[in-house]
Image (cartoon, rainbow, N blue to C red):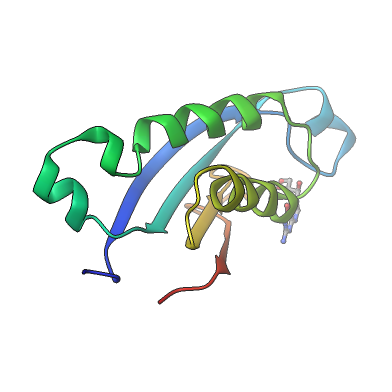
Length: 121
Ligand SMILES: Nc1nc2c(c(=O)[nH]1)N=C([C@H](O)[C@@H](O)CO)CN2
């Protein structure tokens, strides 16, 4: 049992409508998602079977689809909804999710929110 295992998705970039200003409602901007998902990988390690693990491709496709269709104002709201999808639809007990909006603030490399949801063993 390795309850501290993680499955990661790093730098998932999606174009979406996001922002609080009028001009932001008219365009698509890039958000970048970094995910750490608590998952015991020992069963999949033993079986070498995709059915025994958390499929990062399935999670990525679901989040891309959701984010592309969303129109939130704040990255906080987008992050919260994405975290709930991961917890509720993929039976992940705990998630740390960083929602970045690179290019939002001139002169900065990035702005982001970082949230943790669920229970970590
Ligand atoms: N904590 C936050 N601050 C700000 C956000 C946000 O989503 N969370 N958004 C904006 C604007 O939409 C900005 O990204 C436009 O450049 C400002 N502050």
